[in-house]
Structure formats: C-alpha cells, structure tokens
Image (cartoon, rainbow, N blue to C red; front, side, top):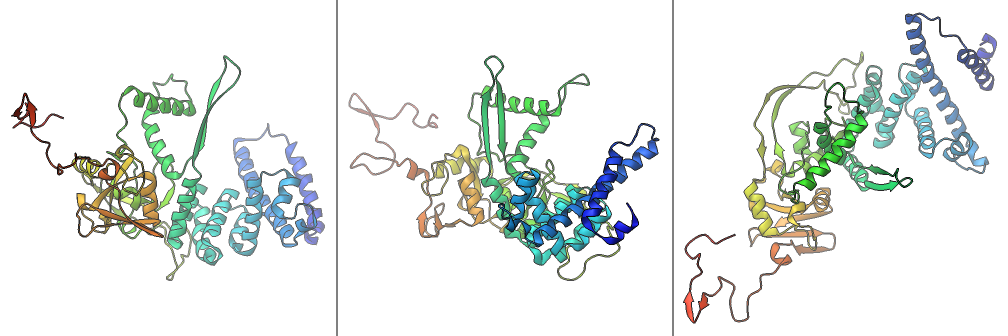
Length: 470
C-alpha cells in the first residue's frame, strides 16, 4: 500500500488496495514455508482478521450514523445488511448493534480489536454484557472484561459477563433465565423415502434443562474400547436411547417427585443466601443467577464443600477501585467435603403425597409423581424441614412461586393448611381432600366403618387387632 494513499485517509481507496493485497495473499505459494513460518502465518492472519473486523464495524457504524439505510427501500441498517450482503437476520442485527456499542460506549475494546489483541468473539462477549446491563455500566464492565479478554478464551469472558450481569441487575438476570425457559421446545419427526426413513430430533432447551440432560447423558457416553468407532454425537445419541430404554424396561412410572434431578452447582454461601451473584454449572460452564439456585435448592440433596477463595489473578497493571468495582476471584481451593444430606426425607415426601395429593396451587391437576417438596419458608432463611413448612408443587408452579407471581402462607389456625395468593385472588391451597373428597353415608359421621355383619352377628374383620392389610 502506498504511503500517499495511506496518509490521505481516503477510505474507499484504502479498501481497494486492501483487496489487492488479499488477491496476492490468496495466490501465494505456502508449500515451501518452514514450521516457524507457518506458525507465524497463522498468527498474523488471525490478527489481521480481528483488525479487519474492526474496520468492518467502523464502516457499518459510519453507515448507521449517516442513516444511509433510511434513503433506501430497506429503511434500517439491519435490513440493508440482510438484503444487500446476504447476512442472516441474527448476524445482521449483531453486527449493527456491535458497531453502535463500540462506537458510542466501548472505545478501548474497539482499539484492542483494531490492534488484533482480542478476537471478534471476545468483542461480542463484551458487547453483549453492555447490552444486557445497560450503557450506564459500560465504564464499569469494560475495564474488567478487556484485560481478561487479552489472556483467556471467549467462553471465560462470557462467564465473567454473566457474573457482572447478575450483580448489576439480579432481577434482569433471573428474568433472562425464565425467558430462555419460555422458548423451550422439542420436536421429533420421521422423514425420508420408504425403507430409508430417519428420525429427526430437534429442540431448544434452557440452561437448567440442558445441564440436567448432559448430567444424565455423560455417564452413559463411555466407549467400549480403543476400537470403538462411534463419534461423540453417536455416543450421545446412544446414551439418550439407553435412558429411554431403561425407563421403559423398568415397568414402573418414574418416581419424579421423590428425588430431584442431579445438578452439581458451585456457589458461594453468601450468594445463596442473598440471591445476588452467580453459580457455575460444570457440564456447560454456564453461569446462572443465584436466584435460580435458591429455587433448585428448595428441595435438594446437599453436599457441603468447605473451600477457600483464591486471590484474583493479575490480569492487568491496574484494577478498578471504588464502590462500583467488581473483582473476579481466582477460583476455589477445596479444603474438605462433608456428607450429603437430604432436606426432605422419604417419609416426609410420602406424607406430603397423602396430605396434598399433588400440586397445592388451586385447580392444578398435577399428581404427586410430578411434584417437588417446597419449603414455604426457605430453609436458607431458617425455615424448618417439617410437614407444617412443606408443600408439593409441580415444576411450573414451583418456578412461578419463586418468580413472585404468586405466594403461599401458612393458615395460622390449621397446621398443615396453607393459603395461595396472587394478584386479584386469595384462596385456600389445594389438598388431597379437595381432589378426592371423603364421602360418608347419610346419618353416619366421619369415622371408622361400622362393624361387619355376618348372618346377623356382629363380627370384627378377620384382621382385627393386627395391622390392616395394604
């Protein structure tokens, strides 16, 4: 590239010269390079790709600032990118949004991308957290995430972004989790010519459900030896079928309500109690809001792990300070592992099934097999694990209760009875008697049945004096 055109700063001319350089690069002979030269070639071209992405975003930002799309039939920058460059709608929206955020709120990130010191994936992770927490927190988030992006892979930056989101806006982080849950869906179909049909499984799950599925699949994905030709995708498919066969071969309905699915969660005790912060899921590496963990811990098997928080790593010469600073810890050092303890005993779950008969939310038809034991006063807040403080809730109403859409309170005059309250109504919680009322003949008060009669003689049942048969 000539010095004259570079110093002139005439962008179209520079871009044309860039294409000339790319033409030479794409026809260059790479066969005679040494190992070191090949490594240098990969590093430099990747750095150039990042720098070129900065130029692309600058061009889109300039296009957007001048509102060029408004003079075309497409009206918006996103639609123009879709139609004129054949981008997918999602990619076009992301590029337009990134260009605006970098231009207006993240100058240091734009500069790092232009130098090639961070990748486009790192940039996307930083842009997303600013989009989630709002531009007011951009100056807090960028000094934390940018030094991290220069040393670690993008997934670590995304987890750090989630931690910042959960601290700055815990309600928004919890809502985002519920929004993802609402978008869930799975389809299973058969397609293909006769004799060569194939089944197609397609779906979208929220983080919690994905974690549960991975936890169930992973132990069943072991290979049968070195000669096992199956790919990871095939092992995963076989593990899913194994789970389905196990459920069908058992001949029994799964006891879904007697034991919660197994989720391994790492969370600080203070975050668990306050509901502010994040927990990390081991299979996906996703950081979830502490408020969601409180819901999962409502009835769970807990294994306390005593750990010490290591000091944060030195990711830059300077660290943010002041009340708005957010420090990223260096990880946990496990010191001791306690014994697992279950919150609701098996006997208590059985008693809840008899008393509640299913989900206690008024008019909910879910049976006990699809319900969890819920602490009305959370055990984290000092609520006892007793029948007077527990009810059965289906997964849907358990989730909406923790969202605050409705609430439960004990009936002060009747132990074991509760009231359900939501906007516009206050009703008694449902019980087993509400589902299947106990009927007695007219004139006979509720109580034990009259003695059996045989040939006019009052006889006791054959099992009198012994435990009744079940």
